[in-house]
Image (cartoon, rainbow over all chains, first blue to last red):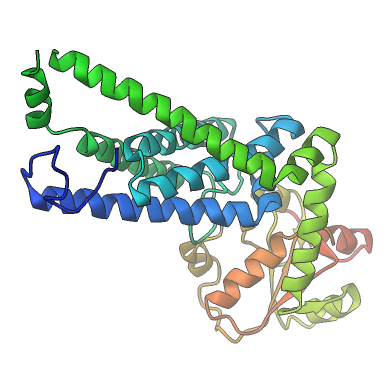
Length: 164
Length: 174
């Protein structure tokens, strides 16, 4: 259940590559930290994020408010779970789903030709455009890579396969 | 148990827990920020956003020099400052303060600033404006310029509407 323990600490998974294990832990902490920061930044300024969501002109006001509240909390909860290692693969799936939503919103907005702030900048504001699309695309690929890396190793699966 | 079955079972479990995590986040958001959602349902979200933005803008403007209409006119007539239009490019093309250059807040970047203000010294006076007294694009651009090291950045708070209504010099992009 608890992913991302230091190499050799999980008796159920054979230690095949300690370097890979440490890389996975580092990726969990870095990606988790990034998304936790992004989520908290939006939680502490809900009306600013609501304004950013509203600027996309994709949702009616009632849904703008719900989206502006739900997305940051989902982001923060999933990022927190990823950092502490509780259901890390599921946390990665939640964050990936959010990234897909962000990417879809950016693509639709670019197609409509709206010049707005993407509301997705971590440290600085970014307009909707190719840069935001590329950055979010890379984040999604990293998340999917992390999900794959967090799957049980082949040796563990083979061990289970031998169970009648 | 086959490998395919194990992988499918793992992914199904992951998806189930992902839904649980998302629901947990949504529930926490619902409890912690019910006020925001209520504004959405009551149709007062836009008013609330405007109120919050106004309070923030007032706080941020305290750190920046601001000019009223009459003062900014004399600065313009004497050619003492570079005027920057922080509105969208289409608005700038349609009409802007004479001799102003376009630097839209929505597209601002270090590269954009360097290209727009090439040859302008960091201590040269700059006046930024946007559409009206209620917009905040000028504030964003002014803050960005300050971060880039421009030391004499001011905001003309009345915005283009007041300037145009007063019949002061305007220009279009030809």
